[in-house]
Length: 191
Image (tube, rainbow, N blue to C red; front, side, top):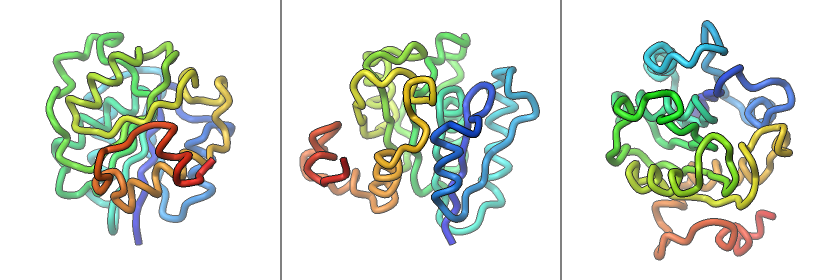
């Protein structure tokens, strides 16, 4: 059985968040719970994820949001052989937390997709593009989608499940021209 580790950002993902909706849609989901959702403690958050990675069964997919993306990226370097796919949605900019030096600027070594918005208040699209290139992650541009959370209209998110499904089937790795963004999903008919 596959395992999907859900890694929320600051303050967790409440009942209306797309991550909570994912948990209801997918079997084998485990939410990585932090001892204090209001304190962005990268070593502590990534340690919690490492603990779950070490005991999760089957193929492991990590679905992270905001500050949770930073914890996921940091942990991914230690668990490359264990992670089958990494979905990073609206990552928080490490500079906002004084963590630029703590986040590696090199390929993750696992199939990965970074889903970004052109008007995310937590990371500019230019920074999202830079990080996706550094990490070797496919970039999916949602356009002006805010922070891709309930406040910007992302509760139930079928398109997000399609992105995860594509990651699970390694469609991002097999795209001949590495097509990206909205056009690719329109062609698939996932809208």
